[in-house]
Every structure is written in C-alpha cells, then in structure tokens.
Amino acid sequence: MAGINQCAKFYGMKSNASPTAAGNNISSRICDLFPLACLFLVVFLLWLPTYHFGFGQEEFRYFHDYSGREILKGFYSHWEPSLTESVGYRPGHALHIWLVYRLLGGSAEASHLVQLFLLLAFSWLFFRFLLEVSASASIAFWGVCIYLCLGNTAWHVAQVVNRQHLILLVSWAGMMLLYLRYLECGKARCLTGSCLFFLGGLLVKETALTYPFQLAALALLVGKRNLWETLRRLWPFFLTLSLFLVVRYFATREAAAVSQTPPPAPFSLSWMAREYGRSLAGALVPVQGTRGYEVIPKETELSFNWPAYFRVGLAFLVLLAIPGLWLSLKNGQGRILAFGFTVYLLASVLVAAWYRTNRLFIADLGLTVILGTCAAESFSFLRGKLRRTEKFLAGAAAMGLLGYLAANLVSHQATLKVLYPYGEWIVDHCREELTYNHEYIPEEMEKLMIEKSRLYGDLPAIWRAREERSRREKIPPDYPY
Image (spheres, rainbow, N blue to C red):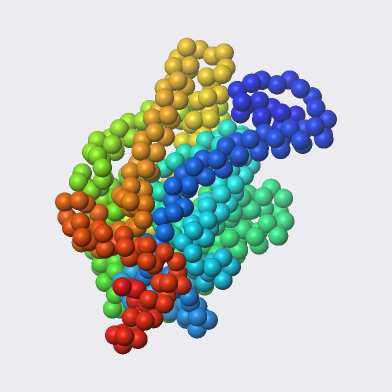
C-alpha cells in the first residue's frame, strides 16, 4: 500500500488500491526506479560534455604512477611534498589515483568515466537516503536533482583532480544511509559499514571532519534519540576522528612549520564571523570562477555579469524557500528541514577556515535537503483541493524552483566554458597568470597550452615526459613541460 501511495504521490495522483504484499513490493520498486532513472539521465547529460576534456594542468602535476613507497609515505607524512597545496593528511589521495590506473589504465577517457561512475553512485546513495529519511520519492528526487544542477558541480565532474570531492560525496551519502538503517534496526553491520564510509572520506580529505556531528544531528532530529543515547552510539566515529587528528598532527607538523598554504589567518572574532558569513552566503548560490576566493567572481572573469546573476539566483532561491518552508512545516516536515539546516551550518565551519567556493559541496547537501523538501511539498499542495492562498504560495515556490535550476545550469555551463574554453585543456586556477581571459593571455600561450594538452593526453605520456625532463635537468619530477 505504501509503495503505490508513494508512487501516486510522485506522479501527482491519488490511490485507494489495496494490493497484495507481492504487488506492493513490485510497485514500490517501480516507483523508486523511475525517479532514479530520471536522475541518472540528468547525471549523464551533465557529464557527457566532459568526456573528451582530457587532462588539465593540475592532473599533469599530481597524477603519476605512484610507487608502493610513495603510497606508504602518504600514511605518515604530508600528502603533497612540494608544499604548494594546503597542508593535510590525505593518504587516500595517492591511493585512489594508483588504484584507478591499475584497474583502468592511464587514458583521460577512463578517468572521466570514473567521474561518471562516482557521480552515479553518489546520486543513488543520496536518493536512497532521502527516500528512507522522508518516505517521499518526490523529496528524494528533487533533493538530488537540485544538487546535481548546482553550478559548482561542474568542477567536480569536469576536473579529474577533483575526484576526491566525488569520493567525499559518496562517503557522506553512504555513511548517512547506513547509519539511518542502524538507527532503525540496530544491526552492527550497518554501524560498521557507516563507520567505514566515514573513514574512507576522512583519509581522502579533511572535509569529513564534521561528519560525526552531522550524524548526531540525524539521530537527534530525525531518529528522535536523546543526547546521551546519540553520543553512546557514535563512539566509534568520535574515536576514529580522535585517532585521525593525533596521527595527522605528527604526520604534518614539519610541513605545517614551513608551509604558507593557506596563508596564516588572524583568527580574530571579527575575521571568523566574516569568513563564516561568506561560507554561508557562497553556498546559497554557488558560483565558481577560475580561482574561487570570492562569493561572487569578478565581472571580467566569466562570460557575463556575475553580480547580477548572483542576485537573480538568490531571488529565485528566496521565492522557492519562503513559501516552500511554510508549506513544508504545515505538512509536518520540520525535522527533515532542521537536519538539512544543521548540515548546512556545520559543513560551513571548515570552509570558513580557508574560503574557496569549490569547498562548499558538503554544505550544499544540507541546502538541497531543504530545497528538495520545499519543492516536493509545494508540488503536493498544487495537486490538492486547498485554499487559494496555499495554491498561490505553492505556485510561487514552483516558479522559484524552475528559476533556481535555470540559474544554476547557466552557471554550470559557463564554468565548463571557462575551464575548458576549447574542450581541450583546463587552466590552473592556482596561478593567476594563467587565468583564462582573452584580455590577459596572449594567443600564443593559448595555442601552446592546447598543444601540450593534446601531446600529453594520457597518463603514461605524462609520466614519460616528466621522467625525461627530470633526467635531463637533474631535478625532481614535476610538470611534464
């Protein structure tokens, strides 16, 4: 009965059927598969333009055939020996690059196929989590769909070096799904699986540091557990986090003493409030330029007036959120909304430590839980026989949803264009002189970059060029050119 009613809710129909248990199970599977198939189609269409993008300059720097010694060294030292990147303990960085090469080889096409697989895995896990936490296929569908269409998703899909972010998304969704099942059934295997997802994300990047606190929000707000029971059940996660922080301290203390990346921060109260505010604002309408240090990129950096775009996107967000929140609360979705809001607040804490817009992807999970609930509940009100005021609010929220999706898709495509202007190469957003802008980059430099991208289109060629340059100039291997 639940399956048919849930399906009817997704399609906008009512159902009074009384199916058998077998029929109920079949209909429930069909209802889950249709919106999931639609989401997989969205993933494929957003990913498809990136298939022939090749490797970019950051891939040239970090992607090489790691030896066993290099992989092992990642478990007791800073992840990036040249100290040009932020200091961190990320043993999973070299491990996942080595694993993909051993399984699929070194072609750029194979690496972009991995991006597709990870995005599909995340979409499935996130959909299952939202479906189980809300019992609504509509909330699950719209939550995942909005997230996939966000402008910043272009970075995670197009840049092979940002595969770590996709792994963190899979880690978050898998951890949440299995922990929710653990709260329902109490089985140790669900708890173990959830903890392993957390550990996998933690070893890839420190973004996962706030995951246990987000699990606590899930238990308190959605699982309706008390504080003591919540903390008692989460001890494996906090123990893992404590051990990780201890190991990280000893592994990175030498690098931290000499590195200036990120630059030393004042950590005054006013500075922390400003950066946290920027993190919260940046997640609302995520706009990623080539550098990503500002909530709104410079007008000359991308293809049109981005400050105006930000205001338009924010207006559509407000149009969706305000009536959508009122309708969702009226329909009893307060706990889900509170959970999404808590994730949004907690994940923004780490972003504020060194603001970059491509670090907003976990905070945006919380935002899309809220917006997906608002969208689904607004559509449910549009189908019902309700008062004119409620119909008007639901219609306004639906218009806000369409506008917000359109604004983000424009940002998504513009970001792809600025990263891969000819579908051949990617600029290095860490080096200002290479920022793509026709006013600043000579035509000869553009042609040279494209030629290099074509020459080093697969990892073995990159490694051979790096080794040859290293032998010729008697310097440590770095860029292949």
